[in-house]
Image (cartoon, rainbow, N blue to C red; front, side, top):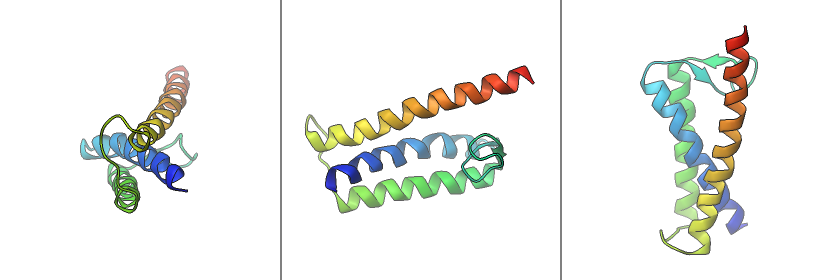
Length: 103
């Protein structure tokens, strides 16, 4: 369970970044709360809320399962979670944006 919590901590922290960055710029961006889910745009305010929710979830998981930054399994699991989610999200949104350019 500890390992899974660390993977999810990395995923939540990674996912908080684009939502906070884009929301703070005042730009719309897809969230799971949009219609269609994960494709349609949500407001900048909703992106800030979604990004903050992800940030807090990741931080709470790290508080419950502390990690030492360095070359160790626990930190590697956090990085793995961020890498896996980051790779998936980059693939997903490249397809979303390609579909929008054709329309």
